[in-house]
Image 1: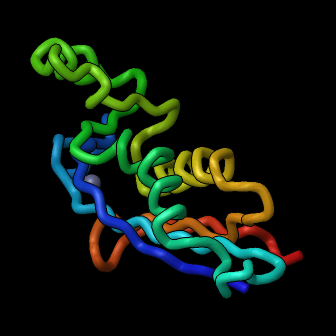
Image 2: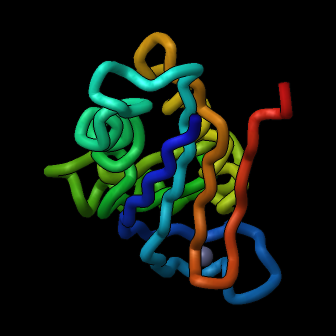
Length: 142
Ligand SMILES: [Zn+2]
C-alpha cells in the first residue's frame, strides 16, 4: 500500500548559462510530493506515521533547502552569496549539476531513500517549481 504526502519549501536558484530568464537569480515556492510504500500495514493500520515521514523529509530535504539559495557548484554567485550571508553559509547549497527541478528531484530521491526506515520503500518523488512545471522520478514497476 502507498502513502502520499506533500510539502512546500521556498528557495532561490538560477540556471547559470541559460539563454533566457532562468539565468537570473529568482525564487520559487517549490512543492515536493512523495509516495512511499510498505508491503503491509503496521498494527496501527498505517504504512508509516505521517509525522515520522515528515521528520524524515524535514531532515533529508526541507531543513537543507528551505530559504536557501540553490546553485550549480561552478556558479560564481555561490562564493559571493556566502560572503554576504556569512552568518549562514549553509543557506547556499551547491549541486554538481544545475539546480533544475530535475536535478533537485534526483537529489531529493537519493537523500530520502537513504533516510527512510527499514521496510519503507520510496516509490515516487516529484518537485514542482510552479503549479504547471515540475519533475518526477518513480521506482520502476517491480
Ligand atoms: Zn526557476
